[in-house]
Length: 260
Image (cartoon, rainbow, N blue to C red):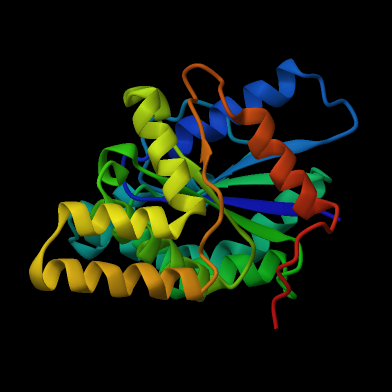
């Protein structure tokens, strides 16, 4: 069985850097029995920190599309992703020819063009029709998650992505080296102890803002979005082993998440 891990997060959260770090970590640790490849699904990216095994830019040229349809960068990206749907069978064939055990899929920086347009869902359901061997690695930006309200807004975004694809999801705190260890510990604690999160909301918010935040917090808890966050540093290579173990657990059928 081939597992597909989709790296999704807001622009600048470090998706491509994490894919590169994961590939390097796997290579360094010599997982000879596991064939892991990287797929780039961002037609607008100029430079990548890794060499993709399969690259959508081989099928779609965003500059040509922008010129042909008189579009700017954002419109060109949207049009390119929509046109990429027609190339999904070719992408699938190229991926399968490499006989991978694990596919790391790097989506566009503007996550909405993949997560909320038909092109993303088409790719996911084409390579894995039953959605039984796919997972999402959702990157949370530490600069946003440092406050209770920022943390909740990130989880709401994560929940909307999971609702869209309905596959197992792993939460990672990317770029954790950019904040103090105490802040990282606090964010991880919030992810497992929503009473602590609610208490901190009450301390730092007031009025309608506090009331909304508490309601969102309780809704997220009821939805089961209380996954423990994995702190990561692509720069230092920290957290890679734990992330790989979690993805492998899903690969081996250890997830308790069953799509319907």
